[in-house]
Image (cartoon, rainbow, N blue to C red; front, top):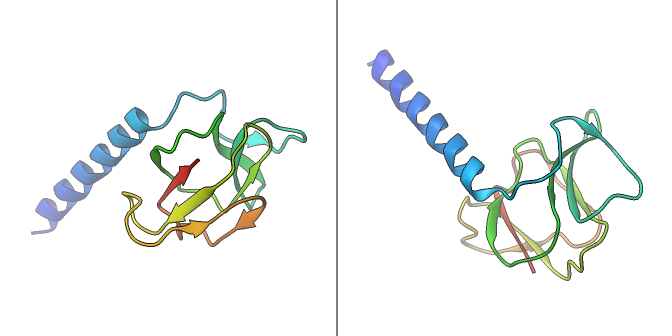
Length: 115
């Protein structure tokens, strides 16, 4: 039973990694890039330490996964009028506005849509 559960978990992890690789836009962000001011686009940060964990250059209305380590965002440029965070991986259910500077507990938002 334990081996079957391990195989299922490994399969789900592989599927998630593949999905994130395909759905996230290509960005110049390297894991652990330090905070920059000013920066460009919509930038996702971790809190401890403060590092860039994701970036989106321009709003497009596409549902995207929130980087797992993200705990706050800041739209530096690009015309982000509305950024909605969702507690589901498919942008389903109620959306919560994450406009301007907004923070949350790690893992609270699983997806977002920027318009």
